[in-house]
Length: 343
Figure (tube, rainbow, N blue to C red):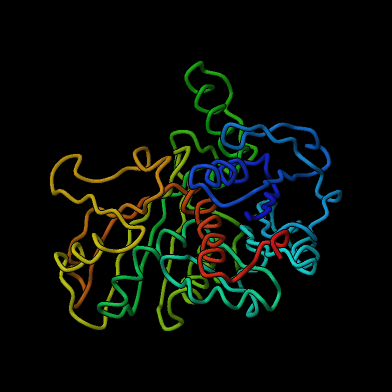
């Protein structure tokens, strides 16, 4: 007997990707329910070779649904995830609403799958920020080997991280530049076409943005609270896939060759690191792929026991939808939940 799965936010970028990945990976679902806001009710979305009609969130009975993949934003999740969890449905939430709750596990399956057992407190599991997910996949095997003290990371984040409106704005501005039309900015605080914006999410009192703070807090929760991390998050004119320039300081010695060998064997990682033109991965090549790609692995000559590297991943997949489906797979494969129909 398979599971019944709901995807909330099924008409959004990540929701559609969740439906696609559930189908691609052959998730053991007897039934998948597409859910969104009332204004999207009746809209059709694809699930493999099937078409699903979207149901309005307030009309769905979650008491016979086993898993809810939630990608409808923080405010919706804060209101609905506890209600859904109280009906015995496990919520895997993609927003920031529950990531910092001590009673909610924050999970990247390649890194801390064992922590998922804590979901029973609230029936909610949190997905990390997209930039954090790919970072910790690359850090975990190196931390196990040489113990990370400090990380300095600069992110180069695609506009899809800001949703469909962000992608539309890059497209519209780029077209306007080519035909000499006025360039208007609505989603981003400055022009994004042919530009970079060192600002993602709101500014905090200490000068960091909320996005940068998220990376610090989430890395500590997922990987190790002793790790010090500072981030600079930058929005770039790329449609899909986030890139990161990462500098790592370790307690113990580790060479670039050792790191390369470790990462080649690590789950979720794919090393493409030839020291020649084109011997590295770019966001264009990572788009549509599941792996976290690691290139430009080299020793950081400014610190003892330091490495520098380039990390790229599809933010809609590993940074969001794929990670959520992988969490659901952990629940199933470890027999942590039973299908209600079978029960």
